[in-house]
Image 1 (cartoon, one colour):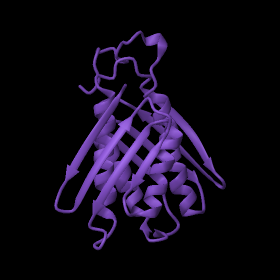
Image 2 (cartoon, helix red, strand yellow; image 1 turned 90 degrees about the horizontal axis):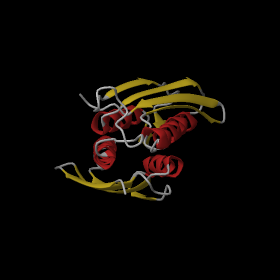
Image 3 (cartoon, one colour; image 1 turned 90 degrees about the vertical axis):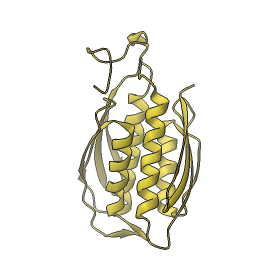
Image 4 (spheres, helix red, strand yellow; image 1 turned 30 degrees about the vertical axis):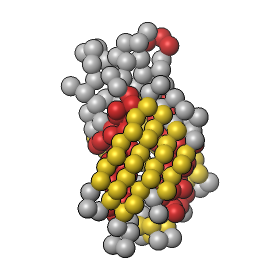
Length: 197
């Protein structure tokens, strides 16, 4: 089983994350931020990755540290669970609709972390959650998972729908990219024979 557990503790947050890349999409998430929990539940369900997140953060300050640090820990967990990445599909891309919104998410599990994030929100907040933190989470996740990730909302009007289409798009792209390609016969999907260099 491709699994990993990461624990991260700073003066700002105390986080424990577990993933199972070959799971059923089960989630057990508690960050203290309702909207963020909702996005992580969607990520698990639509990726087929079992995700557990327990986070205690300085929410009396704001949601920034908790959101970013969960992205760091979850990215590290996915990277660790992937191991040497032998046999994975590696590339995937999806267009994900959410009512009036359409987002495109494209991923390369390359070992070379890059985020291109072309998403605009019509509102600064979704409930109490700052919409600028969506990008912060994607940045932290991509950098620590070691993936090339392009996220673009082609159009949309509702900030909740825009965020949801991005998280669901990532989920579906991850689902395809981490899947084992039966035709690869366990080979690393690179002409160099390794990823990340």
